[in-house]
Length: 232
Image (cartoon, rainbow, N blue to C red; front, side):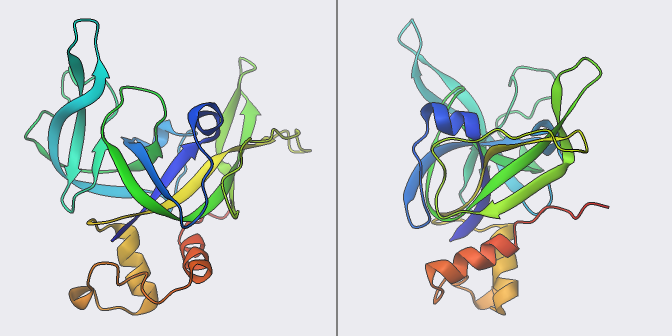
């Protein structure tokens, strides 16, 4: 079974989400974002590689004329289906039938155009604290190098603000980084777990990377594979 890092923004979880903990099953629409568009980039282990075929699928919502719209997705080679951001009618966009390879950041989406939900089991949760600095216009914007991840036993119901430090950076709780185990898929992260455990890839059956580990041991291993770059 594939393991996938998924970022769940705090405001979306507070607004429309349900708190969760490792071991619980969840179902979320997933979006593959350009990593530079999420908190101004600077991501590391959390990036996901997707290779597969582009499709249009029903968005599950009824329009005024009684007909629903569609969402453009990519069906990853091992079965994961994720939505692609942006207007599918923009020039240069991938079209249904195209085979693509993308690297980006998966996010759980409580708002937007609907799209297919992915069902999986939560295996680890990390609270993400993000640094913000004032821009030239006075708006606080994310600072890519000012980010930290902290293991937590479950997702919080609310996300706390912070105070401006002596360095002029405001550090807030921005969301959670979740490791989701999805049946019938495989991933970069699953490969990394097999490597860490010394499991031969060519003889690994479904779920081999997590077999025999307690929930605590698995979460600890996954936390070690979801880090942020050290500040220079």
